[in-house]
Image (cartoon, rainbow, N blue to C red):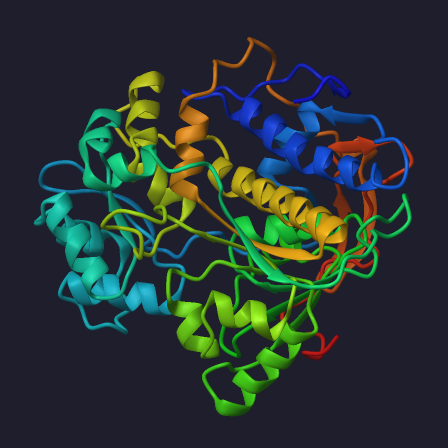
Length: 435
């Protein structure tokens, strides 16, 4: 963090790794990028990061009043003992649930009880079941130690990747940011991300005035996190698997300033019929930021993954188990890889916009959850402190489609540039797919 960034608060998560430091540093990167944008036309304003609030936003920013969020996990998702260790099944998406059940010998649409799944998992070794689920199109991760991951071909590949892969894009037109109090006003962000890092990034951008349009396929939902991550955005649906939907998505991209997506390598190219260069030609000066789970090099670069799976693969859950003196995988207290990667993505978008406003050139940046894990495990230990307290007493009131709720104050204070959202969280598909 630069000298003009001030930290307040003293709370720290209890964890095997410095989760609070990661929260503070990642939020600060995005906030300082906003300050630098304001500094194009006036002195860069002072930035204050609240250590406790930054931590609490990693845990969740919304508190329902008189209603409840749905369960986060599918009934068979989670950690299961194997014949030789542990594996985590990620079955929240219907297609991933079907893949796991198929690999385990169940009918893909079976209503299998969790105990029956656990009994079946016990007959497998962790590596063999991981491979079977992934080969079936699902998402799973065997628990590895830090040393095992360091020796694994994917662990070795990610360890030498930069935190951000950044390249220069196509020529567009220079411009200027919005007014100091809404520096991203007028910036169109096409958001093709889903749980959880990408939506965190675009939520941050919306907090400083960006026009974020989130696009989901017709059959997608993530009810447990939608009230958390759609704050400030418009949410629409279209089917890019059809000719009409693909054409519509390309028209939206042609009029966007920023594209944020979480597709694995090559998937968006096939969906749009455009590679990265073609996207830059369709929208000259495009700022594109994308993420994947396991990194952009190595044998797992195209593997499906999520925060909880990367924690299992990379040794975080195993180290947590030893740190806590437990006999089951012990992840971080929050989805810190997702949230930190989201703020890193937001910083990349803002830096990319600043460069385009100065030079007219677009850019393309890539990040990954696995590389953020390397960042986390390399940070010095958090200072001892009390657990961060969630300040719901200072929260703001928000009228959501699900009912009234309280929203935490932002973790960022930038003098003269307030972080605020112009619209409440909304349901997926509640807007039209147009600018």
